Image: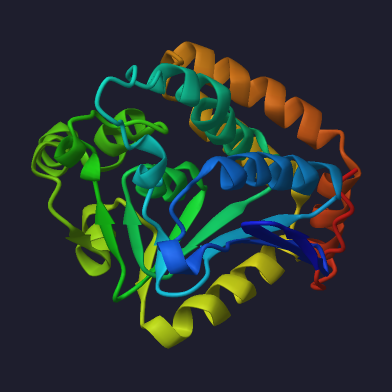
Length: 263
């Protein structure tokens, strides 16, 4: 168990578990957490984990930027929020997407503002029935960040994305699942057991294939059909030469579970 101030990182059996750990502040993101989050995600990439769960301590997942850091006394110069995005939110989102392993968000409570963007930056989002997703930016005079302006319209379409972003109204987890914003809504007591079971399944799965799934699906947003077909060709060519593919075919023919090594 590796405590990193406001973030806890636990590595066990090929599964990394990253817990946002400021429950008294509903896991809002302050300067300490920004540094710890980036360090933790980079460590996951270095430690050979085969799946990652991201969740929050206490009753919230993450309520976004800690606004107590943003209080501006009279006469104080305005903050440079662009700098904050360039130095933290952008690298965080890109680091999550670049991890060559499945990342599961286990949304245990409110995911608001940058906290909602953090959840949607993960590859698979599971949410407790009591959880809500809130595009809170407009309520403090801002637009979406952390990748939210990219994720929302792609996942739920422009009409629903606009409605969520312009009203800032909470979207219950069950409706988020119906809209295709997230993978599954689960009863609260089933959230972590299901997330752990899914992560354990991924830890036994084919690492090269999972990395390829992430790379190709996320590339499709920018690619033409022809570019995507070329990417599929090149990816399958590489995977077809791997020991994992040989093992997968052999296991299928021998009717036994495969033992993937990621080679």
